[in-house]
Length: 284
Image (cartoon, rainbow, N blue to C red; front, side, top):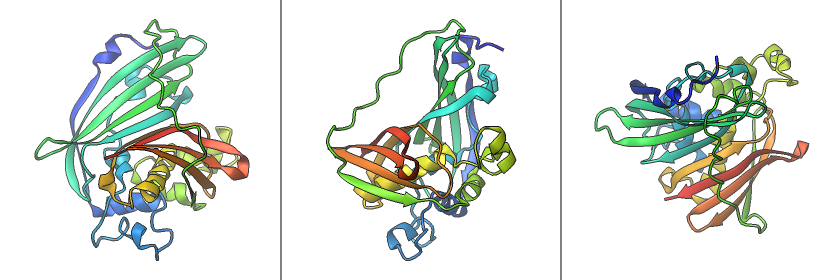
């Protein structure tokens, strides 16, 4: 069914309730590799309940299942890719909370029948008690089979440009061969990340890592490089997923700082593959 524009722009999902506790936040932290060295006291604070800190990108799974679905918009899910993720933190993520989530469609761009569509959806998490916002997640999908519906063809705003100099710092993070199996327990049970047969049918030699797990690894790199592992120092983070990561890969994050702006890129050197582009974080 083709995208019915502009009707999709009125789609809303409001006041959907979710909750999490310390176990959920620690499980997510383990799922993005925190605590891989149990003697690293800086990362231990994210996986141990004494003085527990929360990895900011936990916001991306805290209300897993919320949002306007691909089917509601009229997208062919089989040909739709998760292209970008941007998260704004209105306050640090609490170790436990009850929240409500409001979701909407931000934009649907028609790139043409042969190029597909670009769809932006947004979900904001609010504290269930005081209704103050906690985080806003903007998720961009590249729908390769859904262009030509007659919608606007306005290009998205250009991403901020990173400095042309050599990186200010490089952070290498290794991933466990079973990391996708651990990460999926935080919400995304797509069998592409667990079932070898499903992965082969999709054209991969083995299950690949979730893009949002790589996103969490990028958040770890920024926290380590410029925040002294203090979640309150991070006001936002975003990036484009450019190539798959295989569990067991080591990702090298190149990072640049320019005032309160941090730019980053992720690369798996063993395959000479850039896996994350246009990375940008804002320090508070």
